[in-house]
Image (tube, rainbow, N blue to C red; front, side):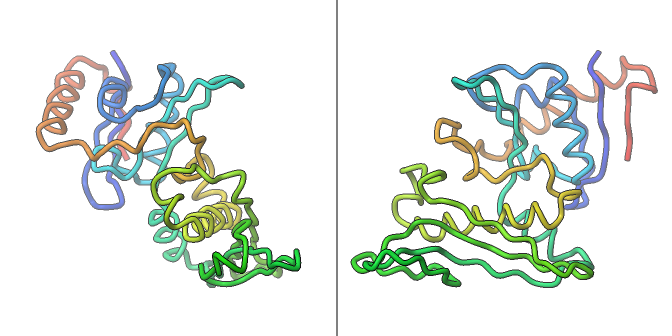
Length: 224
């Protein structure tokens, strides 16, 4: 039987995950995850206190020209909320990079860009951590991340600033954010984010897990 992982998520809810639950309700993409990938996903959820059944995160499995990639995807709010709760967090700044008619680049806080007088080319962010003399900084190119759909069409400055901020937060707190990504860092071909599991589906998942738990040895259940 598959391994059962039990833990209390950041929202205070007890979560029970099995490979069967992840495959049925959480995984998305154009390829099938290997059993080892699913176990790593469950371990990441447990370590980060994420509840995938409530929509905190999801697993993507994407088969592209360069091979298969498996990622744990969370929202920007998770990055910001978790970082600001860390005692070492000491502030952050973020903005956009624009090019004027003279060809000069300008680094600007916020997301205001003159569409007729300037060209948006990227985003930047800095995160300050107590005890470090140099802030963690990220600069990202709009051309590299623009997905040409959804909010990228109507709010490109907001979106590229968000990508830069997420990357700066990951560099500032690698132990917290290593191995997890924001949806807008992923390839264009990635599927849209799945909705949170419905109450009926969650109940079905819990019933399945309870049945599995009755058939496994104690050593197969990890509780935290």
